[in-house]
Length: 242
Image (cartoon, one colour):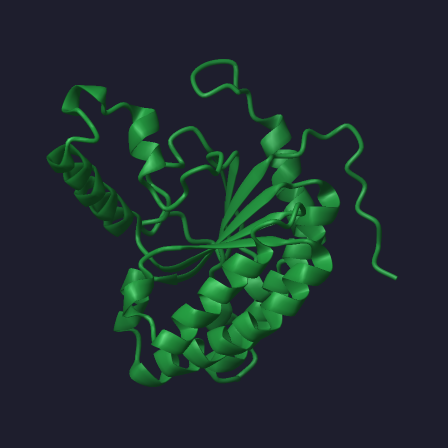
């Protein structure tokens, strides 16, 4: 039986965003191919979603594949797409079993049609689920997201459905991939890297950042609790207080 994580007295962040980094280094330390690290990382994704739900987190957003990841070696990209196909296939059953709602952020158009079809099926079949909402950032880059939002806003102005003087921060947010989702309270990045890597730049304006040296495949419920303890220790008396 899994060890019960004691969270008594802690404020649980409503929305946690994660940059899951370190799969390749995890594999290298074990003299394994990089793909083995990605497989191990995918298993950690499943477990952390379960842990987050048990802890009372309502939204979790993970950076699965960035717009820049297409620049990786072709064989690694193919392996990641194969892993994604397998994950999406299993995710439909898992979402319905755990009442998990799934939404994919990013530009789907560059993905193969069978992956797009699977994403659409997953989002449709889970849209009424009332458990944790799992947002997968896939072929996602924040600058690209903002670019696409600006284009859509421009089209709305051109069509006469939106006046330029009515463009507010809330209006801009409504055109982003995360429309209807509260901004993250806490961002976690694993593997010791201290940068945002073009991730949720608009949404992270008032988010607390937590960086850990733990490689993503080694991240677990205890490490998630450490991040939540850190979050509780932050002094949020001024701007961005909710």
